[in-house]
Image 1 (spheres, helix red, strand yellow):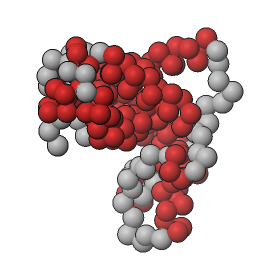
Image 2 (cartoon, rainbow, N blue to C red):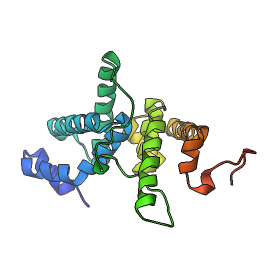
Image 3 (cartoon, rainbow, N blue to C red):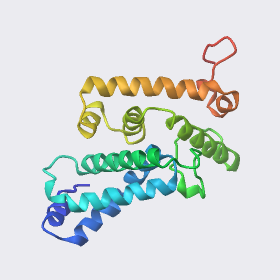
Image 4 (cartoon, rainbow, N blue to C red):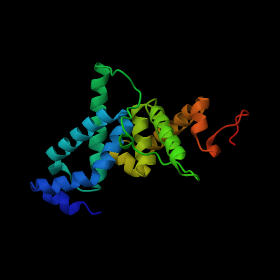
Length: 205
């Protein structure tokens, strides 16, 4: 969907046009914030701050992909929140899953859909989220932008304001560390589709 007409109107002071942009992109912004912060409360705070900041600075948008610009603001909001939390540590790093809708869905192929498969998928999504929280902040952002949002390396380099080679390195390291995390615990490993597990000999099944 072309954001340019709504952006132009928003830049001229049309609040309704900006609200349309919010509705169009709020799921993507919240999902990114959730993946970066690890819980629904912080994700909602960061997403709200991101939209406030985008509204204040909409005149500074000079073209390009509006969603990419918005996600860059959202990642900065998460970074600022993280710095605040470091000064005032949170009670827990566990994933807050107050309701099913709170947890962004992690797509996992399953040939036998049903209540049990859905429960396993949600459990795997929670485990993956815990794994993401073990990554360095810059690696986590690059991996989520790539594997969750589908941005290519060049777009991620633009969003994160780093060199293309740095993006590739961060994503490769993040994938290796997340894989190691998922395979480090037998309970986690059992949640993975069979083709991703390792046998006792250390080879993929």
